[in-house]
Length: 445
Image (cartoon, rainbow, N blue to C red; front, side, top):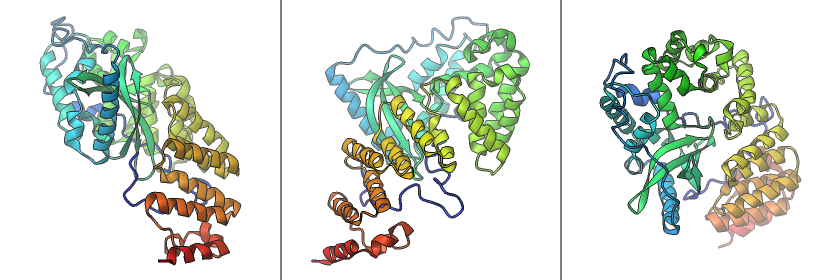
């Protein structure tokens, strides 16, 4: 991760005590909502309004494009190129370079992945063209939801048989999430054909297929049921109509209506993957309104998520914020540990885990995680911040000064009285002999 040009001074330990309630403030580790591309927005430009003849023109769509098959195993040279692609893509996202991000995408390849698993339909070429237009004309293309945050390239991996690059997304508020960008070779580099969202363990192409399946459902209920993983006997036009109403409510920005519709579904469909995700997303948006019933339902849904979405999802990231508010730091650490295992390791998660260990007064554990995080990412100011928090909690002011020296050397920033004043956690340190020595040191020419 590229460090800021002038890193901010480390504040009080990140999970300090707010005035009204001990624990981490709401939203500190909250999911970056919106990583999952809302396909109703992308599909809004479709020019075809009638889908009643779904079974006409069989084979027409299949003939449009060959399937997007995973490429052969990469050569050593291609593997190096893939790492460069991941680093460049993360940098383009972080600097909000929409042109570069869109140039890295293969919207035609994404469209093929969407349509190759749909039943044949009339006007397939027009629908496909409309999809590509909708996927391409937003800033950032079909990766537009990533453009609000800072991206860090972590590693290459394989997803669904395709080579992929793993990105960590983080907002200015510290919200963190992960995506795999699936690619295929093109010339000496690569272009993206799909994206896997770790929170809900779903791909952009899967979300798009679900929306398109609803649009074409009235003449092909069996096809919709199969796509959504619903037993055909449970799938009727009423359910399809409610699914379409959910999409309209999402497009209108009405999560309360989405929740109402999801709660009206038959009991056996409430735990069906697609409807469960839609309900969870609505609860996520409504959870900051102060409604206790919403908060209870949200927590219950989060606890049920791993069994419904699979162990490969990272809904634990959503649970962490709630656990910190409940002062259940051990459970928060357990959640972060599971996420770390799913994504294959991330120094930022070690920093977050260390912050939980700090709240548990496990100072050795917190220091060990801070050191691991910095070893993996030497340019991470958060690791220094965590160690300072541990030293302050132990009142080891000599060690605090040592960290300040390291911070000054590595980042070129001097932490003086002005930078630290106003933070209660530094009150004792500012009155200590060690800080007096530090002031003299930094005042020297």
